[in-house]
Image (cartoon, rainbow over all chains, first blue to last red; front, top):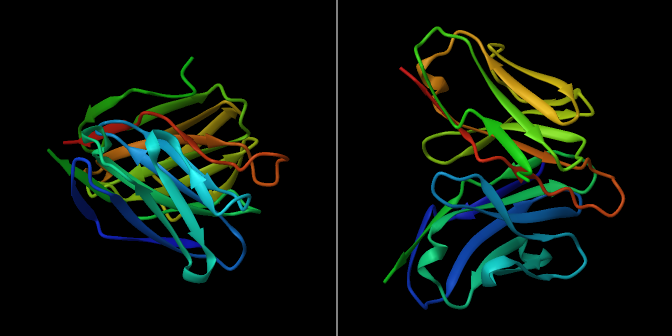
Length: 113
Length: 117
């Protein structure tokens, strides 16, 4: 069965600094990978997705992620953090041939002024 | 023009009561889901329905019963509520795997915060 591991339950950066949120996946078949963001008291919103078309995926709000098969990773980055990026971020994996999506435990991003 | 909506947004109730949460999607998707998010933000899939049929049923107490009257609705009924049921419940929807030209990302509702006293 597929799964994801998010390294670091809490990441804190200064405004303007690089954001790096780590995600490693496990899947026996080609995966589809997703990053979602959850702002306080809201539902999850899709940031970006990897579907095998391109290894570097650009998403909303200046985020991007790179699929690295050799490292089984799909880390999320943003060159310059903004205060509004403070939220909970979830990595998720799904096999291409079924609906079962598995989420990581989440990483809380804090942005300091 | 809300894509996935849930009612109510907040639900406060006593132990032992029975309650329902409703979910509707207007995206034309054929698969809907219920997730439970605990106080540590961990998301756990509870149920998945495809074309009104149950296709994922994780280990949840049988006090929880999903009901799908049609493809656009998936309601969650909970009997004999317990303190441990307190959480945020999210409904989501997607197009099913294998559907041409879709990658089946899930769209989430705003959540229902259930508090059992």
